[in-house]
Length: 210
Image (cartoon, helix red, strand yellow):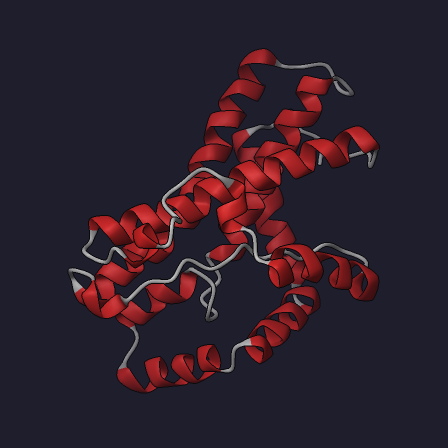
């Protein structure tokens, strides 16, 4: 995919759109399952301004690009009181996984549009649809990684024995340190992630060049 001002602009639009729906669905699921914390904090909205964190969404991409040569961004986390959720850890798993699954649905929808329209390579439609498909699949795969505080960890919490849950809680309690370790792990083992992303892209949109 060519890097151009047009693609950068498209990427920012897709980023804000995808991020907002992802976080809003976390807020919707938690509110539906009994915890209105995110609702009261104004997170049950499409407005991207409600989901931007000045450090993780703005500063982190700049730092990661300078240090690693690639962008790494995290939206403002939706606060959830898991003790208030119905179904215990399984309720937490639903709240956690609804975010990445939403991105997968978005990717499928845009893949259907891409396959139906078959836009010419280099066109505005091709650029938008290719970025929308690729980025949302990336969000789905990345956020499904079972490393706290990523969404996939909530699914692991639901099935993990207590000793493993305590270990995961210690990682999550580390805050910024856990995020830093996560970034190192992602950039150290990005091969499998890229491979999974490419396979899903070619499965959903075989004509898409990545």
